Image 1 (cartoon, rainbow, N blue to C red):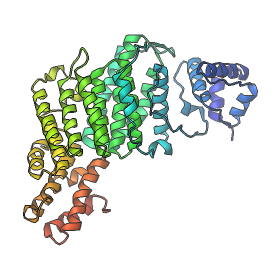
Image 2 (tube, rainbow, N blue to C red; image 1 turned 30 degrees about the horizontal axis):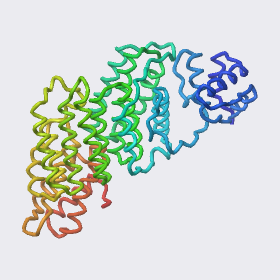
Image 3 (cartoon, rainbow, N blue to C red; image 1 turned 120 degrees about the vertical axis):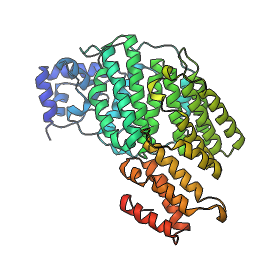
Image 4 (cartoon, rainbow, N blue to C red; image 1 turned 135 degrees about the vertical axis):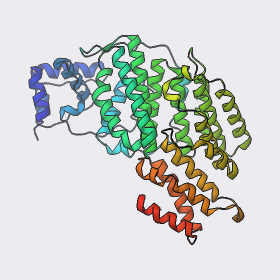
Length: 457
C-alpha cells in the first residue's frame, strides 16, 4: 500500500529521491550502521516498504531539519516494527544514544506496542544500571545542535511545571489515569526539546526534567501493573539524571526502583537500591534529607521483606532522625510529599510484612489521614490496616473493624486508576470471602464492593 504520509513529507521538503537516499545512507553510517540506499530505495519506501533501523529515525531527523519543525518516526507512515528485546534495559554511553532510547520508548508506548506494554519484569534488571550510576565515568557534554528551535531556560521551567502537574495527578488519581496523557505530552512537547539546540547548562537542566518525566512514566507503569515497562523507564530516568548531574533526583529514582523490587518480592535488590539512594541523597553540593529519610524508610521495607525485624527497626529510627534535619524550603518539590504521614505509611507497610498487627494499626492511623491529596496512599494504607484486623489468632480478629476500615476507601478505589490500590482492596475482599463469608458485616461489605469494583476475586 502506498505510503501517502511519507510522500507528502518528501514533497513538502522539496528534496530529490537521490538526495534523500544519500543523506539517509550518510546518517546511518554516522550511527555506525552502514546502509547503501538509492533513489530506487526511496521509491520502495513510498510504495509501502519499511527500511531497517536506524533509517526511520534518520529520515525523521532529516525531514525535521528540512521542514524546520519536529517530524517523528510516527509521522512517516512506516509499518510498526518489533522492538528490540533489550530496549531501555541498559545505560547508553553517549548522551544522544540515551535520548534516542527514551524517545523510542515514548513512541512505542504511545503506539501500545505489545512488546513494551506486556514486557515481563526481569530479575536483577537494576543491578547493572545502579552500578553504572555509582561509578559514573568521565563528564560528558550534553550540548546539542539539532533543529532550528533554540531551547532556553523558560522551556525547561515549563517542563518542570508539567512534571509537577503529572505527579499531582498520579498521587490523587492513580497511575492509569494520566499515563497516556503523559506519553502524548512527552512525544509532542518533550521530544522536540530534546532534539532542539541548547548549550551544556540548559541541556543538563533539560535532561533533569526529562529524567523526572521518565521516572513518572515508570511509576505510572508500575502502579498500572506494567512492571517490565516500569523497569525500562526507571533505568533511562536514572541515566538522564546522571547526565544532568543531579544526584538528589537520582536518589529519588533509586527509591522508586526499590519500591518496585520490593513489590516484586526481591528484598535484596530493593535493599541495594535504597542504600544507593541514601548515598546519592547526600553526595552532591545539594543535599536532600527528605530523600535520605525516604530511602532509609525504603531500606526498612526491604529488611521487612527479608524478615529482618531488628534491621528494619534501626532503619526506621534512622529515617526519623533524618527527618528532623529536613528544611522544607530547601527540598525539591517532587520529594516534599515525604512528610511524617508518608513515613508512617512506609512503617505500616513494613510492619505488615513482618506480621506486626498492632504496629500496622498504629502507624496506619497516622499515615492515612484524608485531605492531603494522596488518595492512593490512603487506599493502600487503609487496606493494610483492614488486613491487620483480620490477622492473628481468632480472639484478635475483628471482622467488623476490618470492614469498617476497608469501607472507608471503597469509593476512592473505584474512582482511582491504580492497579496497586485495586489489588490491596481485593486482598481484603478475598480474605473476608475465604474466612468470614458468613459474617454479616463481611457480606454487607462484599455487596457494596461488587457494586463499585470488579467482582473477580
